[in-house]
Structure formats: C-alpha cells, structure tokens
Length: 150
Image 1 (cartoon, rainbow, N blue to C red):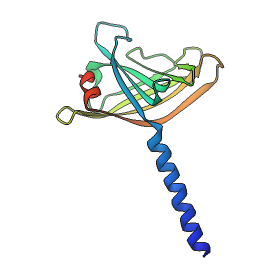
Image 2 (cartoon, rainbow, N blue to C red; image 1 turned 30 degrees about the vertical axis):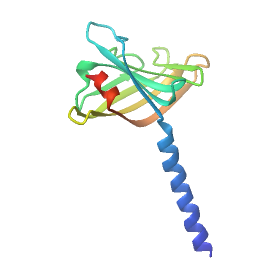
Image 3 (cartoon, rainbow, N blue to C red; image 1 turned 120 degrees about the vertical axis):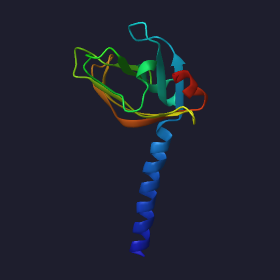
C-alpha cells in the first residue's frame, strides 16, 4: 500500500511540474515596432501569462536565423533587448547592475511558419532595485504571429 501511495505521489508531482511548465506561457504576441537603434526593422516578441504579465525581447528581423545567439552583460549589446512587465513591475537590463540577457534562435521554419527561441535573463526591477531571474525559457512562435517575424 505504501508503494501505491508513493507512486501516486510521484505521478502527481510530475504532473504538477509539467502542468506548471505548460501554464507558464499562455500568451505570445509579436509586434512590428522598431525599438532598437539603427535602420534595420525589428520586432518585439512578448510571452507570459497574459498581456499584463509577460517577458519580451526585441530583435532585429535580420538576426532571426537558426543558430544566432545574442548575449548581453549589463547593457553592452544594443542589437537586442530583453525586458518584462510582471504584475505592474518593470524589469530591464541595466548598466548600474549585473544584469544579463540571452536570446538564441534554435530554428526558423518558414514552410511550417514556426520559430523556436531560447530566452534567459537576469533583469533589474526598477522599483525595488532587485534582480529578477528568467530561467531558460523556450518560446515557440507559429502561425500568424510568425509572419510578423519575417
């Protein structure tokens, strides 16, 4: 009987982690907006719980190619940006704190209209001056939002 309950408990824990992971990204949006410096077109990819609780990254369209990896320590790479709005708290990269951001493009499939990004960051909360970590997160953009990436 103890083994039975142990198996049930382990199954519930695994289900809980999988369910939480799936619930993590309920909202994905792609907006054509030139947030980055320079004449190259860029887009903003937002992902999270909803349009009021999300992380986002801005990337130049020319950089959206399989294998491209953009990394920034503090704010030393202006070619992309990672930021967030979590429950009304703004999170940004900063030169005054040890922030970090990375966006890697795992794949871009134009035929199936699907792009896969890995995003990771350590951002500064501008209200509390605390660092907030975004663990490596896979962001899949497909269908109509994918078309805005191209």
